[in-house]
Length: 191
Length: 191
Image 1 (cartoon, chains in turn yellow, orange):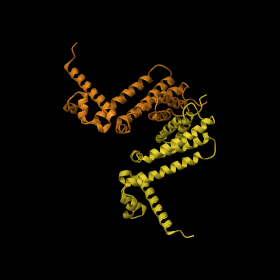
Image 2 (cartoon, chains in turn cyan, red):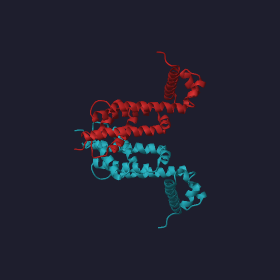
Image 3 (cartoon, chains in turn cyan, orange):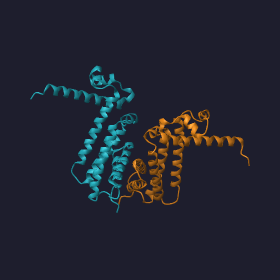
Image 4 (cartoon, one colour):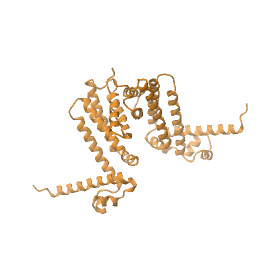
């Protein structure tokens, strides 16, 4: 079945956009924020400079779009782990482990890029969304007796996400796993 | 015994400086960073504008000096708790509780001021110093069997300080105490 012309155009635009986003992220990772220009991005993406400007007005807005995609993908990944099989405690561990690895990865982008990207309102919204769903998992775990119920689930969620931000400075995957274990130990019912 | 002239001058200068720092901190807390001028600071400190400029060149440098004083005072307070009486675990709890309350207080300064002040190199140095001495307390606790020894003390210190940063968003002292309890629970030996 042949695609409609509009769909073809739309698919093409999305493909160009994705290429630009990925190319820019790679260039910034390699050369730093100041080492990347619109000309360089156009060249590496295999499109003309004029075309690039039809999509984005500057490097910052490309990075903001890339970052929003990243956050969306991370939330989707964490949401799938939350909705997976297993007890509330198992799903909580899966979500927190994935979140810790994301924190470690994120740190790799460097402080300059991190500061630029983390000002956006979409970051605050994503953080709120994430806190909410970790809180729900914790409430579920408290009802089944796997998670302590002497501290409000919202406070425990806040504790988790702050503690796991420590993954940003960790060198190895084993250290990230230890951090998740220690964080989870804080959540267990007090005997 | 009469003071030497130089000592009198020095004491006077220190007193003026301290007054300016405290006045500025109060003004910024009340009116925000943009609502405070050198003229206003001079007026509220009870000195002339020309005199104020002999001490500081702008509002930002006054705030930086005030913040350095604050950090110094906090580190001294935490150091005294570390060197106090009691087991390693008790002293660790005292240090972490005080640190959590400092984090909560700090948050009260507002995001704008926080971002301005926390860029300084002295903040990174203070953080390093603090991590080091929490790590030493944790090592001591691990030797006496009160703290888990299956995770390196440096990683546990990193976990503690990140987890307690969650105190920044807490409304009550009781919630801060619950956060400290949860954080400490993560540090106990695994049975």
